[in-house]
Each structure stands twice: as C-alpha cells, then as structure tokens.
Length: 105
Image (cartoon, rainbow, N blue to C red; front, side):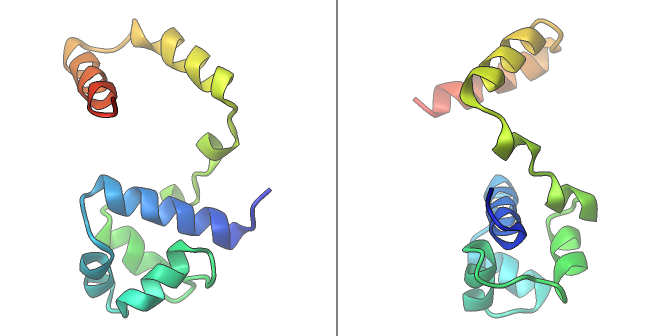
C-alpha cells in the first residue's frame, strides 16, 4: 500500500482537478508556493500546516482529504458498484454520469 503522503497527495490532486484549479491557483489560495504544492501532490512532503487551508480552498470537509477507499477498490468491484447503483440515480444524476463517461471516451 502507498504511504499516507502518497495517498494524500494523489487525493489532493484529484480534488484540485475536480474543481478545475491549476496547481498555481490552489497554491495561491492556500498561501504556498506552486512547487510546494507539486511536492505535496507527488507524495514527497506532508502538508501538515496547510491541511485546513487546503480543505477550505477546495470547499470540502477536512476528513474528505483522507477518503482513500476508492484507491483500494479493484476494477471489477468498481464496475459492480456502479452497475448496482445506476438504477437508483435521479434522471439528472444519470445524465451527469452519462456525460462524464462519454467525455472520457
């Protein structure tokens, strides 16, 4: 298993990209240098002093930074979970999932 620094860095990058922020933009929001953020995302350093600012800048709860469960799930389990839960989505959410998947191909 990856180190906590590696998992956290990967999660921060995932959340940053989901908010359509560049490294420079997020770094400015939390008051650190872009190179420092890059080191955090690469798992080279731990953002102990920046954790609360990161969560605030990404508009998430602090605990969401440490949500690594989807990194531990194998591919077949992910497919099964998605298929099982598609039927319960609202039409709006279903369209969102459709557009997301379509944009990836």
